[in-house]
Length: 171
Image (cartoon, rainbow, N blue to C red; front, side, top):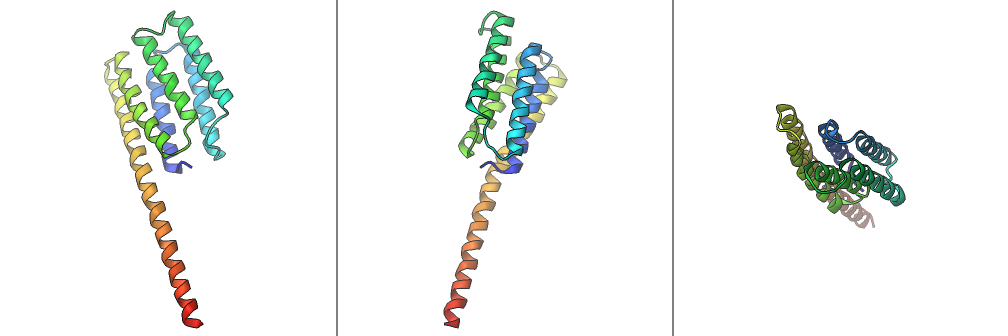
């Protein structure tokens, strides 16, 4: 299960990637990616870690179809970045544990940096930096939430040991 703070970082990162690329991607692709983001948001809200594999596959194939019909190829800067974004959002829909989250956030770093291939304007730089910070915060929260869980388990064990000692003293 992914901690709530980490889920928030994932959603913010994907939203920033979508905002950075919305002006450059085909409209249909931006709509599909937004639907994937909404599916992820409602999946996280219900604490169901993943959307159905059929929906994930359907969204991904539909997005790849839109990319192919718009660019007539998967080769090239625009088509390549669009394909990377599609696979990033598909990976987000199937993320369910710590390993997947680490891969997702690192892949998001790469996809956001590839947005510079569209434009090198100051606004794109700001979006990429915001995405970078969101990814790094997500990775930090992932580590700190694991540490807090381990600390809570340690406290629970100590409390159980204290209760056992009291019980033995009473006996």
